[in-house]
Image (cartoon, rainbow, N blue to C red; front, side, top):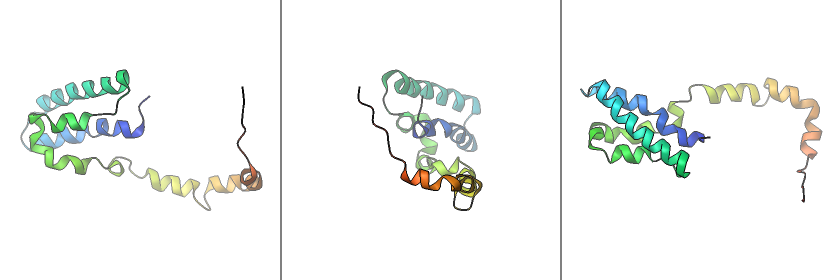
Length: 119
């Protein structure tokens, strides 16, 4: 299973394609180039257990030169998470429905310990 940080470069691929197209590159060509690099990077992650190197592959490929200067700015996770952090705060933060539902169990939760299993 890919971790969220490992997935971020894959999430950015559509933005990369759109920016290349805005610079006059064929969408079909951009899609094919990013598809090939994505498959290569995915194989490294899945088969070799190594970090996702898609961004490094893009930075090393001349086809993507028109957007190299924009690439680092596209790699901010908050650009792709929408309102999720606000929603979590609203429901799980102080005074939210989750904290209210857990309130009767506060002492139990506070005093809970970790079980240790020795085999």
